[in-house]
Image (cartoon, rainbow, N blue to C red; front, side, top):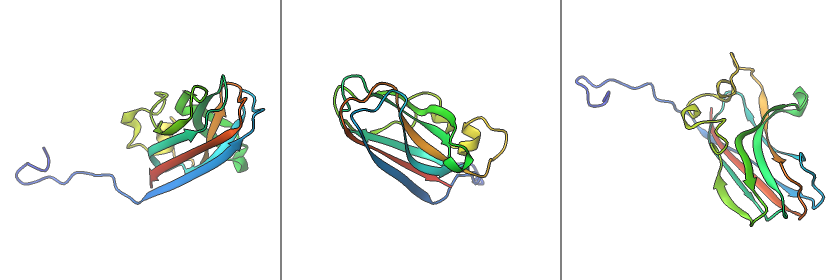
Length: 154
């Protein structure tokens, strides 16, 4: 509508350089439920536009959450363990590269224009980095690879 108005109205468009963070780990066959794998870090002012998960078949009960934790320099505590994805089935078959950005419903589609700190419900930018962490919500009883790729704009 703004573009077609006379005179045209310039939108406040979001812009920036797309950046990518990623990590790959080898999960051992003895991974208990609750095991955490720190995959990469993103800044608090990042606007996450795509979070992709891929993994091997990790056994008979393995499910994976993808969430946000404080980085280790800030104590490493969980902020939201399933911010991006919750209980992704990693036991029926390998998970091909799958976008899980909004799978859990905690980070909704309408949050995509918000910086991470705002989407997490903070009242101000914490000016820090956060870890993107995969947590096993079921026992991993088959060794395999887990990979996460996060595309974001700052």
